[in-house]
View 1 (cartoon, rainbow, N blue to C red):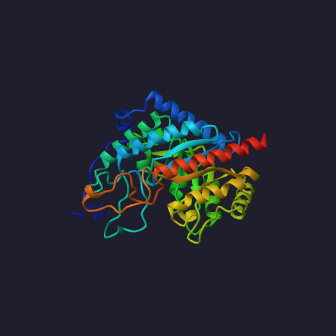
View 2: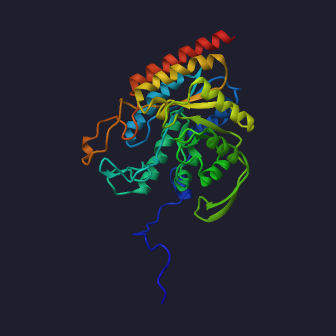
View 3: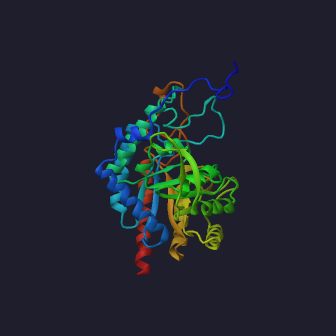
Length: 360
C-alpha cells in the first residue's frame, strides 16, 4: 500500500465554520448595513475629490482586547460626529497581523485576533472569527465605518460584508493572490508602498487590480470555485515611508502623483502617518499630520491619512502572565493614546476648516 504524499508535514487538521455559517450566525444588522453602505459610497467620492473632506483611518495597530476596543470605538464615534464637516473618520480594526519573524521577544510572534484570540498559543481560530465579526458589527452600529488589512484570504471572507475600506500592507503589495482578490473586492482597496520605498511596485499593483482577473477560491459555503472579477476602479496608493525614512514630503508626493497619473490611476494618495513616515515613533505622527497642511492648502493630492491610535500611549510586549498586560496599550506598534489623538485630530480639523474657508 502506498503512503500518503500530501499533508505529510501537518500535525493536525480541525474543521472551522464556513464564512456562510458565520455570517448567518452573526448577521449584518440593519444599522450596520447602513453604515457599510454609506462608507462604500462616501470613500470613493473622497478619493475622486468630489467630496472635499479628508479620509481619516484611525485606530489601534491591532485588536487584542474586545472590551477596550469597544471603549475606544465609543470615543472615536463621538469625535467623528464633531469633526464630520472636514474629516470622514473610519475605524481601523485589524484582526490579522503580518509577521516577518517566527519569534518576538523570545516567544512565538502573535499573529492577531483571528489566529490566537486568547494570546496564549491555543489558536482558537473559531473564537477569533466570532469575536472579530461581533466587534466590527458593534463598531458599525456606532456609526463608524471599518477599515482592515487584507492578509489571509479566508480570514478576509469571514468579515468582508462588514467592511468599508481594505488595504494591502507593504510586505504583500506585490502578492499576485492579493492583487487578484483586490480586483474583485466590494470596497476600495489601498496599496501601501513596499518597505524599500519603491512606488512603481505599488503603482503597478494598483494597475493590475484595476483589470479583470480570474482566480480559484472557496465560496462562502466552502466550495472551491472559479471567481471572475470586474476589476477595482478605486485602487489607490498609501505612502507609508520606507526603511530609508519618510516619503510624505512635497517632492515624494508629487513624484507619486505623476506616476499614478501616467498610468491612468487615482492620483490622490493616503498618507500613513506611522511606520516609515514617523520613523516608527508614534509621538511623531502628530508632526507628520501637521506637515501635510501646507500641501493640502496648495492642492488636492492628499485624500486622507492613516493614524495609529488607542486608549493609552505607547506599546508593550505580550507577557507570559497575561494578567500583567497594561490596560489600553497596544501589543504591536506604538499608538498615540486617546488624549493625544483627540487633540491632534481636533487641531487638524480646525486647520482644515481654515483652509476650506480661504478657498471659498
